[in-house]
Amino acid sequence: MTDLERIRHSAAHVLATALLKIWPEAQLAAGPPVETGFYYDIDLPHRISPADFERIEAEMKTVVKANQPFVRSVVPREEAIKLGENGRLAALSDRAFPSKYKLDILSRIPEGEEISLYTNGHFVDLCAGPHVMRTGNVGAFKLTHVSSTYYLGDEKNSQLQRLYGTAFKNKTEMEAYFTMLEEAKKRDHRKLGKELQLFTFDEDVGPGLPLWLPKGAILIEEIEKLAKETELAAGYQRVRTPHIAREKLYQTSGHLPYYAESMFPPMCLQESEGGEKVTYYLKAMNCPHHHKLFDAIPRSYRELPIRFAEYGTCYRYEQSGELLGLMRVRSMQMNDAHIYCTADQFAQEFRAVNEMYLKYFKIFGIEKYQMRFSTHDPSKLGQKFVDEPELWKKTEDMVRNVLIESGINYVEVPNEAAFYGPKIDVQVWSIIGREFTLATNQVDFAVPRRFGLEYTTSENSKETPLCIHRAPLGTHERFIGFLIEHFAGHFPVWLAPEQVRLLTVTEAQNDYALRLERELKEKVVRVALDDSRDKLGAKIRLAELAKVPYILTVGERESSSEHVSVRSRKLTAPEAKPWPDFFHQLLEEIARRSL
Picture 1 (cartoon, rainbow, N blue to C red):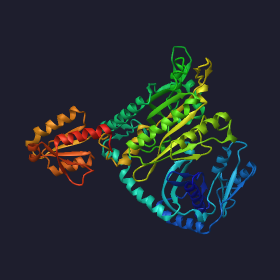
Picture 2 (picture 1 turned 90 degrees about the horizontal axis):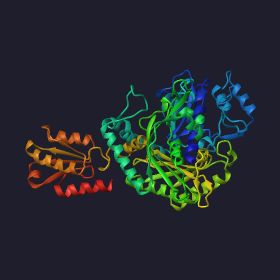
Picture 3 (picture 1 turned 180 degrees about the vertical axis):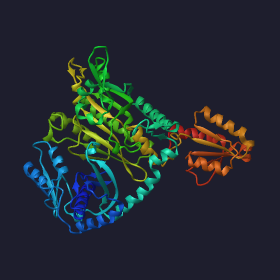
């Protein structure tokens, strides 16, 4: 946990303490730090509203001013249960009713795992930590909003109130954050996506299932074109897999039963008359399918590394309360690939994946990024992580060395690896400083063995390959959502759905404008001609609202001299340019994928 996450986690406990001082009957569930701050889930008859925030914050300031130490204690399970039954967990004192949510959380902690409590003042909470030293170290904080949620995200459970806040080291950082939020509202991908006619959602189709309008489909096609060119140059082979598979495939991969809650419900089909019913699932991940492709043909060490790439569509049943525009959806198209290689080839392959990321960052103007390198906890081998201590050490050392040698900005996070190998979560920041999770890379030395994947070595023996899961551009949905906010809808000309808008001043310029339009289309430039009788100012305004990179005006002067008047967000004022010069410059910008 980072220093900022510690502050925010501690702020959640300060919030809980304040809530209980105001409403001692409140039942509290979970209160973790999150990407934008912290929250606490509350079961309370009183409906909290923004009108309550000032009162709650005032009580929080009192707790901070008291500078209460955060004291950690490890207790036996029986003692924690007794405290919960007495209503003492997530409370300021014993109560006449049990701490039902904390007792439920306690029941989900595996036997033998350490149970810890954190106390500040009279507040005692079931919590793994960590925290800052004292409440006075929480810094600047502010409550932001309140929403409804279901306990554990399950619609069958009690409905709770989720009270959100944020916290920073100091007031200056917090003020900068809220300034960024105001800018982020203007750049909200849901707002701009509607205004620019990029995508839509429809209740008859279903929540979390985006429909891409023609302009949005152009963004997808341009990003896929970039990915395919890059992957072809890097030696990837394109494959295609179905959107559905039998249950057995996901049982072999280990995703069932552990991932079942995130998958759409199974479909039981009778495939033949009188035959047994067979269970199918919508594809939630591409890797099991790619493993089957590797296994379809006998493999030799001479073929390795084998790199399978696919923009595969996956389906994940996210809870309705967690859906968020394009950022959290139920249908996603993933820039997926799986690299099968020997241990000796791993470092070079992993380095090449990192270099691909850096290339993409440059193309899209992503200047700030960080890779979160998640490793295993040796004490949890055979429980949370595959029991292969030597392979864990070897692969983690290799990943760490590649990151260091490549000069990649990274942080190491223990105990957050995937069950089958170390992983890297790629964090990027938009132009205005908003953080996004772009993608995840994973090293897999366990699942290929479950599938019985093998290749013949130079000594004519059989070995299981290592597998690198990588998706540098994440999913179309999340990445385009990021790009909309990153560029505020002003996409670079190579990516823009409409690259050029031609505007005529009068009908006398129509023939000249039609000729320019034809020349642009011959070079596959996305151009639209506005030769309507509207006033020029209105035409310009419409083109600007559509965020077209280049707006070309042609009047009598331009048509008689083979010029165009160029408007662009890069220019402070319109500029007259010879048509051949502008035409050449435009094609160069598109070809180079200039920002």
